[in-house]
Every structure is written in structure tokens, then in C-alpha cells.
Image (tube, rainbow over all chains, first blue to last red):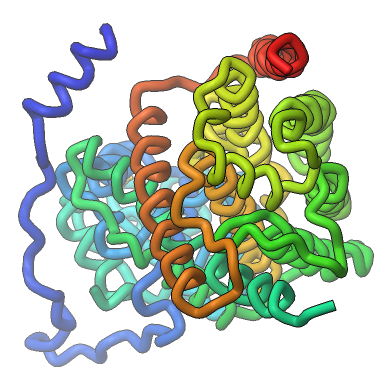
Length: 170
Length: 315
Ligand code: SF4
């Protein structure tokens, strides 16, 4: 596409991000469950490292949508990074398979404190459809301590964004 | 020796430290808007810095003290660069000459520090990034030298403050062929030096295509904050230099409060325009293949060389 065509397209498209819902409250607040304690140092800026521990890639598609232009998780201060050393949040998808158990432990250990482990999807929370499968070690919580979880198979991008907003507080 | 230039240099450093995160914020925000997103706001890089400073650094097992020292050296070189380059005021510092060789050496000190940082953790990607970075540095430095040399001929001095002052006092020298060629060459090498598109993609997640990011993959928390601030400072200072060479108006000629304030305001305006232009150009651009980068940089060297030739022909 020519540069002029690209410029016209950008101009015509304008802003496609959906309007932001209000600042999220604690979702556990009416169920009476205990609200997770999240580090205050991460307010306003959260770098996310994504680890696929054995997902079917359904969660990845939703994750890509959450950071895409429509849901735009970046506007709340969350950003995907390339190294766990740069990260504050380790976002894990999928049930933990035998091959990924050790890499997952190492990735969490390589993330500087204070850090948050976020389990995304039913598989990450309780193995979901893959419970009892021969290659599966367990849910993410069986391998590393989980601070926050997003239910759903796959979870909606809006839910992933809401979980990240709980950490950034924006 | 008067203290006024020293005070002005310190003011420049302070101004650069304040503006550097904002420049990055403006480029990211502009990019987000052009992509149809809302964007995190121009203050986001400052928030990232504050957060990084609050975290506990984790260093890979077996790293040498270099991992601790290199980010600080890099930051010191960037701060020195901010003091030497005429950003707010064009006053030569008696202590350290703002000579082109000094400026290039200060840039190189930072380049070497970050390349060693990339090697120190012993990861494969770090070493790859360092080797690419040094290759590009070797191609960039001659162009910087030759381009500034071309600019120094009409000014009769190789000190950057005097070049900017001469261009401000004789605006006719800005639109000469030599001046235009040299500034274009300089602009290309500034993009290469600061790791922007089309030479390096600052937002990439693919380790195989990284240059700057690959070297800092193992850096965390406070160390990463220093490295980030240092590279943002480099970008802002070099952009500010290009801005001041293109539009030298507003740059203070004396150390009085009024002109310096005006200089800071003018700098803010120039940096904002350049940051928006940079981000807009980047949206329409893809990263060059690594093996094409030397061709681009050789092209910029040719421009710089033509600039020197032209300035001798005219003079
Ligand atoms: S939760 Fe659903 S979409 Fe996500 S990895 Fe498991 S099966 Fe796939």
C-alpha cells in the first residue's frame, strides 16, 4: 500500500479502541471472598511477561485481542515485554505440562520482586479440559504461587484487561 | 573561568532529564493514536521509571561487577552528553570542550558500556545484540565526525555550541547544500545510534531481530531504569541537537535567566515536533534487514562526505 493510501486509511479509521469502563472495583467484593493483596509499587505501570505453560492457544488469541487496538490494555499502563527481568506480572496460560513446569518456575524466579503471577483461563486455574491428562503436572497454582486468576475458557479480553487493571489501579 | 556556563550546563542536564521521558511518551502516544489505540499517555515512561526504581534488582548468577557498573557508566555518559551538546544555550564549557571529538568519544563510552553489559550475563542474545550494536557504532561514528566537520567549516570551529551559535547568527548558512546534506546525514545516524526504526525496532519482542533490547534482556529493576533513562536521554539530546541545527532560533546566547528560560521553551517545542514526526514516520516504516543497514549508513556517510566537499567548493 502506498504511503498516501496508508495515511488515508489511518485518517478514515480514527480511534477504534472501545471506551474505557470505569475504574475496576475488586471483583470478589460481593462474593465475600478475600480480595488479593497486590503490591502498591506496581500502581500505574505494569510490564507483563507471558508464559504459555501448555495452552491450546485459545487463551493466546484472547490475550492478543486484549493488547490489540480494540481493548487496548496499554492505555491502563500494562505493556508486554520480552524478558522476565523487565516484568512485574508473569501471565501464565494453559495447564502446566511436564516440559514447561521447570521453565515456568525459572521464569517466575527470574522476575524481580515485587511481582504478581496471573493465571489466565480455566486450564491455568484448575487444568480445565485437560485435568488428569498424562502430560499435565497440574494447574499453575500447583507449580508457582498464584496471586490473581481470570476464569473462562477462553476468558474474554475484557476480563483479562480487568485483571490487569486491578494490578495497575488505573 | 566564569561559573555561568557551568550553571547553564547543569540546567541543561536537568532539562534533558525532565524532557527525555516525555519525548519517549510523545512518540509512543503518537504511535498509539495512529494505530487507532488510546495510548497510555505521555507520562507513562516516567511512571515506568518510578516503578523500576522501586523494585529489587535481580542479577544473573555469575555476572561480574560490570553488571552493576555499566548502567551507571551509560547514564553518566548520557548526562555528560546533555551537558556538552548545545540544547538550551550555546555557551562553550571551559572545563570540557564541546568539541566534536569529545562528543563522539562520550557517545562511544556509553556504547561500549552497554555492549559490555550485554556480554556480561553470558546469554546468547546479549552477545548477539552487542556484536550488532558495535557493528552499527563502527559505521555511525565516522558519519557523525564527517557530518559535524562539514558543519564546522562555515562556523570556523568544531565546537558544537559555536556551530549552533554561528548558524543562529547567520541563518543563510542553514540552507546551503553543505548544511542540508550534513544535517540529513546526521539525522540518519541519530536514528541508528538511538535504535529507532528502520535500523532497530524499539517495540520488538523477537529476540532474533533485536539490537538494543537484546543487550538489556538480562537487566532488571534499578539497573534497567538507569539504562532506559540513559537511552532516552541519548535520543532526546541527539534529537535536540538536530533540532537546534535545523532551527537554531531560541537557543540562549547568554547565561541570563530570561534567555535560558526561552531556550528551554524553544527546546520543548522543537523536541515535541521532532518526536511527533519521528513516530509518524515510524508508523509507515518497516525495520530494515540487518544486512541492508550498512547500505543505509554508507549512504549517510556519502551524504556527509558530499557535505564536506560542497562546503569546500563554496568556501
Ligand atoms: S482455558 Fe480454554 S482456551 Fe485457554 S488454554 Fe485452556 S482450553 Fe484453551
